[in-house]
Image (cartoon, rainbow, N blue to C red):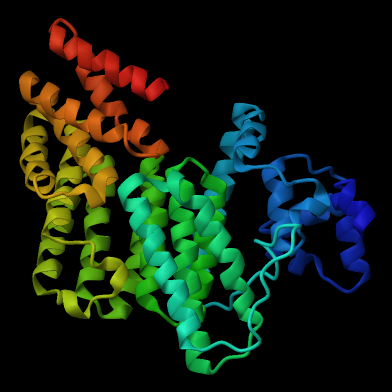
Length: 436
C-alpha cells in the first residue's frame, strides 16, 4: 500500500482496499466520490488533480506526505487553476451538488461518518492527547476558537487560518480520549464550531475546496451533537460562500435548508439571520416581492428574539447587522433597478456603518464599499468618493481575498463617472488595490 501511495496509483490503492473487504460504496462515501467514479478508477482511470488526490488522502485517513502532497495551499491553488476552464466549471458544479446533498442528509438526520482519524495530522510528531478529558479540556478548545474568530473578524482569515487548522489537529485527537457522554457531546459542539471557523477563514482567503471540506465536517459534528442551531450556522455560512461566488440559487437552497434547522432550534434570532440571507439571495435573483417578504419576516423574528437565550454564534446579529443585511438585499436589487433601490441601500448601510468599531474591520470595509457603490448609482459622486476612500483605507489593513472581490462593484460604478477627476482617481486606486 505504501508503494502504491508513493506512486499516487489510486487504482491500486482502491484495489488493495477492495481485497481487504472495503466496498466501493464505503470508498465513495469516504472520498466524496460517486460509486461510478470509484468503479472507473478501479478499472484503471488515473487520478491526477491535486484537490482530488488530497480529498482521497483525507477521506481515507492517509497522511498527505505518503502521497507527496505535503505542499501548501497556495501551490495547490496553482495546480487547480492549471486545469482547463470547462472542466473546472463542471467540477465545481458537481462539488456544489455533492455538498448540498451532504448538507441535506446531515440536516435531516441521516447517519453521518465519524471524525476523520488523521485528516490534520502532519508527518511530524504531535503533542500526545490526554487519555481522559473533562469539560475543562473542551472549554479550552472553545476559548481558542473564540480568540481566533476575533482575529478573523478584525484582520481577516489570512491572519489566523493556519492557526485554526493547527488547533484542529490537536482538538481532533481528543476524540480518542475517554470522556463522559456530556463531555463528548460538548466536544462535538466545539469541533463543529472550530471546523466552521476553519471553513470560513479558508473561504476568506480564496480556498474554496478546503472551505467546503471543513463545513462538511462541521455539519457532521453538529449533527452528532444534536445541535440544530449549530447546523443552521454552518449552512448559513456555506450559503454565504455561494452568494460571494454569485451563485444565489445554490445559496438559497442552503439557507432554506438551514431554516429547517433554525426552526427546530427554537431561536428566533437564528431564524432572523437565515431570513435576512434569503432576502439577499432573492435580491440577487431580482425578485423584489420575495425580498420584501423576507425582510418583513426578518424584522418580525428579530423583534421577538431574546439575545440572552440565543446561541453564541448568532449574537453578532445586532440591529447594525439587520440594517446591513437589508442594505445588501437592496444593493442586489439596485443592479437591476438603481433608481428604486440605490437610495434605500444607502440609507440602510449608513445606519450600519456608523456603528462599526475596529473589532469588525473587514465587515466595515464591506459596508462602506456597498454604501459608496450606491452613492454612485444614486448620482451622489462626492459622497461616493468620500466613502469609497474610507473603504480603501480599512481594506488595506485586512488580509482577506474577499475584500478585493467586494470592491469590484465600486470599481465598476466609479468607472462610469471617470469624467470627474476625483472619481477617476478613486477608480484607479481601487483598480490597483484589486490587482495587487
